Amino acid sequence: MRLVDTHCHLYWPDFASDLEAVLGRAEQAGVALLVQSATNPDTTQQAIEMARQYPDRLWAMAAIHPSEVKTATEADLERIATLARDPSVVAIGESGLDYYWDRSFEAKQQAFFREHIRLAIALDKPLIIHNREAHTDLLRILRQEARSGLRGILHCFSGDEAFAREAVRMGFLLGIGGVITYRKSTLPEVVRSVGLAHLVLETDAPFLAPVPHRGRRNEPAYLTYVRDRLAEILGCAPEEVAQRTTEAACRLFGLALPEVA
Ligand SMILES: [Zn+2]
Ligand SMILES: [Zn+2]
Image (cartoon, rainbow, N blue to C red; front, side, top):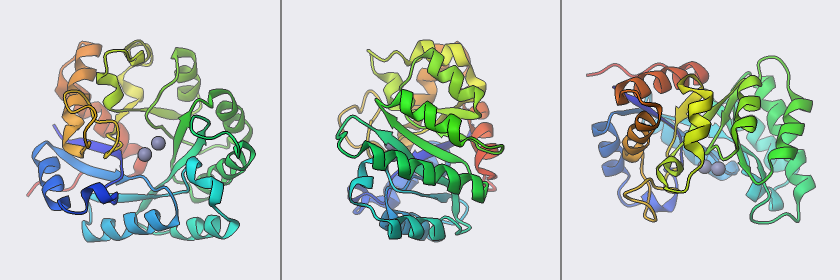
């Protein structure tokens, strides 16, 4: 019953002192593959280096996070395009729109998002999307830029049922993480409506820890709480959630589970 953490940030300073222990606990919990989302050229480089250090277990993404677009340059985008060709990079991400923190550079966020979509299509790699309070613009840009082969994950999915259905129709999976364990979450209705076939699991570690660790550092081992809550909501066995989400993640990234020793 192995799991894939489709989205984490283990290069974050939070993990500097105990990464080995964190990875050990992840393995114990059955988290067989971890894909690290990048936020700028430097963290992309770090994710690639860590993927080389833990081959077949850690994989990388390449992108500039929408909140980091403010200070990013054309040269940064070119660096991302180069790094994205590394064989350890299995997706372009995370890119998208974030209107929550700062709306002063919306146009630049949109332009960078378009560049990331085009890169994902050109390299035939999945696109991992970050979206916060930007549903309308996000869908509009995706529709305008969509080409055959465009696929990916709406990570930390936060939309309603209609938005979820539209995302699925466009070839995207929904990334489900710790938020689903929060009492006020509206995600249960959404996941029941779209069904297990279109879901993958993620932690977004070190952020968004699930209950009972909410408010503290998140880590990949906690993916089991997300799996169990999802099983409860969908009325199926945790094993089924694990199997189906792991299959979907492996198919999307073109990855195979490592051999069990
Ligand atoms: Zn994000
Ligand atoms: Zn993230």
